[in-house]
Image (cartoon, rainbow, N blue to C red; front, side, top):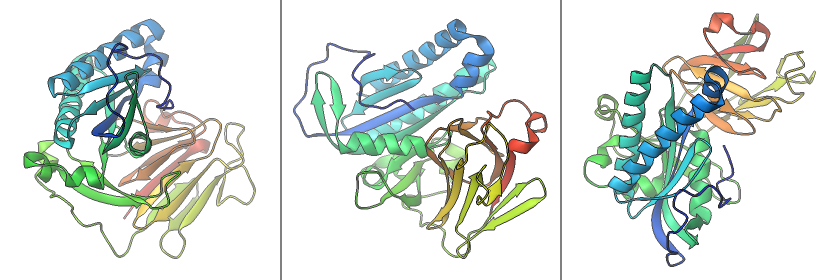
Length: 316
């Protein structure tokens, strides 16, 4: 995901500068699967589709009282006066994206990060720790997911209060303390099964990882596995597309985090998600079951993937 700080490509460049240090709800949202879209449809057609999605998203932001700060590539950055406005707008964007994608016969999804806090505004752009945390949250979210910080979840009122669940605490670069991540469940059938500040699952937590005939099990006693060409890796994959230290999976509290450290990226497809999460020097939470491809994008049916580069995982 592009660095959120550059001020170019602003959608509304002539917005007056607000007072520094004002509290706002910061949103990052991007179109997951856009890389494959460009590969399959070509630059011009894909750009038209992405531009259309961002245009609709911008209208939703403004309808809910927010302001679009800028768009960069397939990403939109916006601010809202309150957490409620940010949450409702993001849910509406997710619903719109699902509808647009289904009608167009595409598998595109949005993923988003929301964080409430003080921001510094300069010539229409926003900066500060609140922005950095929101950027961190979207990197962890999978396609179709909305992640938000705990202070954002606590600030929600009304219907939005019943649409969150607590996931995990994570470290954030530049911060001494970990932050607690919540998920905003925008689909009503899922939201009805959860509640605000649902406690994290405690006790046994295990991840099984299969590569060819090799099986690796991670748990509290064995919390780390490494993947790469390096001979000391837990799973050694001798392929030029794989970096010497390509990726690692580590247990943090009761969540398994996949961290990409490679040149060519790592790709995740969970059984209950249509989209593919693409990581380049980023992290993602592994949930449920699915497949991981190292050094080569996941496209089409799993049976058609490069077997040497494919791993299967199951979290229990």
